[in-house]
Image (cartoon, rainbow, N blue to C red; front, side, top):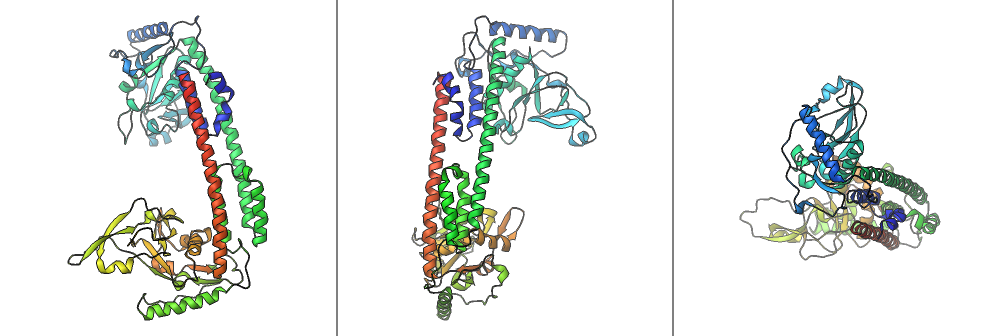
Length: 559
């Protein structure tokens, strides 16, 4: 792709993820390779510029304004990363810069508190404070000497400081023959990969010697000026594009939130259908970025578990009849010692339910209609017992709404405990907690692995009767309404949260008629499938844009 064609279609490439950041990087790459502006045969050669800089440095050494430094080694062929125009030169960074690091003075935070003023105080990544005095009063190039930014490049490594200012010992201070040359070197340092010149990983650092050894592709001074001007224009266009994109995305998010709010305001299935149809009619506008889909999923779940997704049918067997059967079956299982004895639980109060139950529904504690048990504890002393190893589920395996069985581990248990812990098809698995996102996650066991058991940080809830669909239970516990209970009941520390088995058994649990459970699950599955398809389509579009961006960038760089 020709450079002119690339810039004519500049904005078309910005749909890719982090597109404007990548475009900025590409502009800098083109600049330092001599492909951003035309060469002019009337320009003074880069070799002549190098001679002038050398003479200036010698004069400063002679006047004892800077110290003499060791001669830097000649650049080797393997250090040259790309071809440059004929009038350019490869030169070491230290040969064309004047280091003024010796004039830096670091001040502690306490010192700066007592010296507040109007002068900028610079660190490795820019201005970090204002103080009452200055060390420098001319434009100079600052380059971060240490810090994580040397690796992650979240902000520019090189930047020009102007006016009167102070610099601490975390940024190199550099001068050269002109401001245009400083600005070109700023572009160059921000364009290249600095990893070969960085020492340390926990505390990354680019010392003076490493920095001075960097090979620089140096244009004539007049061309440097043209490059800087062209870069400034193009980077300004990038800023404008990014601003427009951000405004457009914020507008989409606002419209999406409004549409979701209307959806959540639905009082019955008819209202839901009206609001849903409005969303469907504006899908391309509301859902053209993948980030909007999760909120739609949560809204669907919330409406589903509140009984607003499908109509109630007065002919359905009411949930109260289901509960009676399950309690009767529970009592028989206890009598036959198939499950542990049941501990009576307090009746549910109205304040525990955040929405009005539809006709035919009942609210019951989860422990009344499921057999909830903990799993195997690791690290037990099993000396003298006949044991074997079985695959087991950890918290990492139980995600919200699905199981991740890619990495399975085994645990040693006594052989007679297998029946106690073995998972059965339809078992509901809920996580005890950990990080906030792990609290109360639930999924269904479908019998994917033979003789699989579960760890004690994963609870197993087994429905006492087929009047409770496992799919309904998982839908509710993963919904915003269900998660609200876990977040309220959880034991919390700074970043962690957990629930115990008693709290899980106490969970207020809305139960629709069985026929309605089936209708809700079926409707919800269809809507979630639509969300999955839409999200996949949007991600595919982003991937295509990213590939187009990569191809275009490669063609421009190699042209």
